[in-house]
Image (cartoon, rainbow, N blue to C red; front, side, top):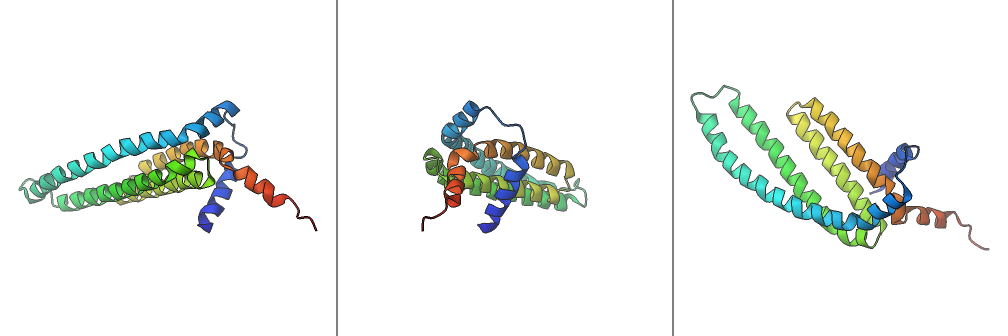
Length: 178
């Protein structure tokens, strides 16, 4: 967890000089991020069910393609890589949804824990995407993943102060009375 805090501090330095959203927009986003998370949970649950269904159908099709007389010699490797990337993505999505569900309460209370969970979700999502793109040698996909994670992190760090980050820092700087 200490590495996450160190990374958070480093990234907050990167975004310190970035143009900021208006105060009203930051407050609105911070106040409403909890129900946006609930919408994300519901949509992701449907995605998980859809992916499982697609994987079940694809299992039958991949068995057919791999044994077909028309298949290329490398068809097994392509099918295996596709399955690996799909399973990595599915596991990453399940972990993300579980963490997002854990974040709803703290986000509603505007606790730092909720914001930290969203930050960890962003890191996990980036890692899953990069691993999937490396397995399939999709270098453009890695660039897209980094770009979208950067955009999401911008909004995340814009609302960071609303979750008690400055208040904690201000309390730490107050000298104790002798």
